[in-house]
Length: 321
Ligand SMILES: Nc1ncnc2c1ncn2[C@@H]1O[C@H](COP(=O)(O)OP(=O)(O)O)[C@@H](O)[C@H]1O
Ligand code: SF4
Ligand SMILES: [Mg+2]
Image (tube, rainbow, N blue to C red; front, side):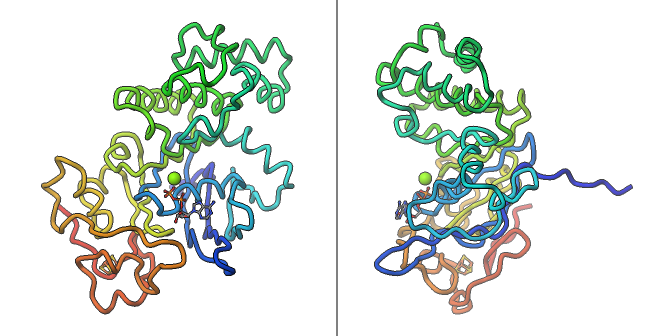
């Protein structure tokens, strides 16, 4: 019997982002394609500067000024390019919830938490003032904030880092989004709070059947929390697959390097950890962008490999049985 695959909540096809730099447009993200189904958590993984945030921001129309964004972004099968600018902006608070790494950039410093939350609820869900306040208190309670009603009258500087992140999660979930994008939501938090926030996001995903795009540099978190992962290097996919499988049997030398750098993962260490740094914008090699750091590189790697069978590499490592 043929089964028809459901339309993904998010379907990204050939996304590219170019930024004006030194009088020319330089690539920051190229040929990014991936999809996220309802209830699925997909990770974007890679070192700092690989273009993860730039990819995520392009999805919600928040690229830097002067950026050129190409490719197709479909939400529930609808091309967002076909939507009006106003409609697209509303996506930010409607169909897509966005959780930023640093809550201070997303929360207003001089508006009470309650005002910020009820504004969003009234705009997107057309709630009355009283309904919106009630719902805001429920949401804060749901994300584990004690004395939620009292917190509605506080300002962001009166909250701890963990509380701020919970408030932002509550805000991101407030309009019942279909997709939540979480950009390194726990990076600024201490380890215990990180674990609590991850647990909370996992619960929300299951309860609400959310699609989640989870951005992190930490492949170990990905294996525990996400179904699939997309490893990014210098603006591009280099390897994709089930998250746990990538951790156990990385095949791209870059993925391997990320795994080898995790303490306690020495057993998969077949190559040295990754020397050097992600190349700066405008300095990407013409062939494989990982060449200068790759212990496996040959002259063939001066030509850019295609993305084929979930990998972009001329000489992938053998799969670990
Ligand atoms: N507003 C900006 N203007 C110019 N370059 C930027 C801007 N933001 C980020 N970059 C550059 O774009 C590249 C990708 O950045 P980013 O998407 O933030 O990486 P990641 O989230 O993976 O750490 C980096 O080289 C970064 O320095
Ligand atoms: S294509 Fe070559 S340089 Fe690039 S990751 Fe593969 S082996 Fe290394
Ligand atoms: Mg980032």
